[in-house]
Image (cartoon, rainbow, N blue to C red; front, side, top):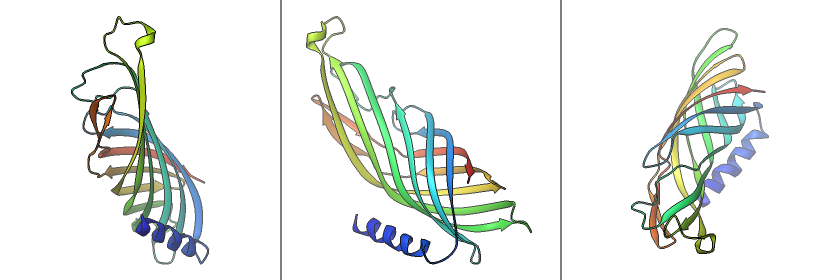
Length: 194
């Protein structure tokens, strides 16, 4: 946590020193592993680019949620409703490998690191035909450190970004059942710079 905080402060120092800054918004397809459903992922980024030395730093936040997951496995209860939310917060650094004369076309290769926060809420009843009075619900909050190598191809203000998420499994217990969360997987996003 201290390392992440130091990196964040260092990035803020650089951002006020030099370079060009801009924002990015993206939406794409996220394919996680380990019993978590595929789905849409969105994100926002603030980027500080050093045009002279061909690299950039960025602060990023993504968002993903699903109501279809089997992270409680094997379940000894009947799950009537559930919600799983991922909120990755991370820093990127990338180097510009290729650009044309007017820099309309650019290819970056980089890596990010940060923390992902997850929220998991579940509602269950012992048997599907039990009345509403028998319903139980609970939620869990958790977090973990992850790394995220990526590539970005941009043309003018539009870009495509394939990205990997590499993390370890986080385990816990909810309503007497063990669960495990692992957001490792990949995403492919398209976005716009402004």
